[in-house]
Image (cartoon, rainbow, N blue to C red; front, side):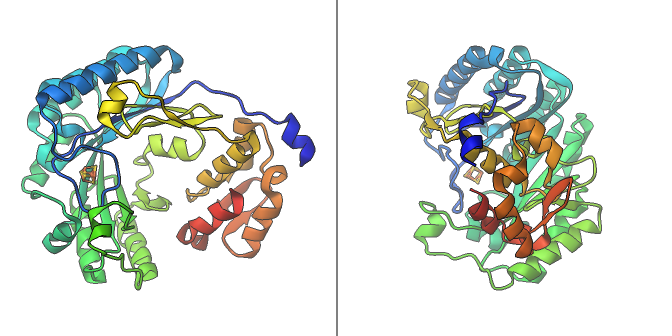
Length: 378
Ligand code: SF4
């Protein structure tokens, strides 16, 4: 291993995926640990954010290759006022080279997704709308601190499709202390009624610093495996299959942006709290709108190349198909067996990973207990 250690280096790559973080929300959900300003903003501050993020795009546009995916997330991009929203979309379109098949996702809050915004998204070429639902059940929504209602959701999803945006994701959260399996099943079936080609179903985790943590709420792990199986079986009835721990899609509906990042793609992240990766180093901009506008330095995560390669290996094992070993070798220049053969063997013996001559993938247990894979490999 010593010989590999000194000889091995990873190559820096031009980003082929772009992430833009929009740091505004209408209030703050009780479970949320993402960086966003919940209410302390107005149109003027949004315009300042736009000036800065467009300037950042201009600084970085030449460093990118042709983009295979764009993901505008947050925060809640749709709480931008109309002119700011339009500037953001146009800024991306004008500065970057988007491949003809480029997937372009916008995260939307159903309440702030207006017809005007849907039209803008359709006209500029957005291909995917990701809607934060979390739960259709009012008591679960209250528990999560979700504001507003889902009134008019059906009409909005229809308008999204009419605007030519053919891919629709719905985000759900499960594992809530007040949620029975029956309530979860109702949520899943309600979501399926809208015929999305993608559902993200995240198990609640109570993150430090959130209101849920302050309220000392705990996730309900008692029926975790039953709920996990229920989600998989229910979504499969409508052709949505698990392809990552928390993500389900039809064959054509997978989120290519996230899929590429789990498989080691280089990406550029713009906006406060956004992370970038160039194949070697990872860096994250300040999670503070004003510090980011002032141009404060990013925090750089620089680790030895072999450790980075091991991290890339572990990330890919979040996905159901894991790694094609040749794909991993081509991407990193190192053989995964040389890199972490012993550990992979141990994970295989523990029933968490399946390893053969061409592939390495997690078992169902390996998806359920993915932390164990990460701890072993990183
Ligand atoms: S809408 Fe999303 S980003 Fe905003 S506070 Fe809620 S969970 Fe966090």
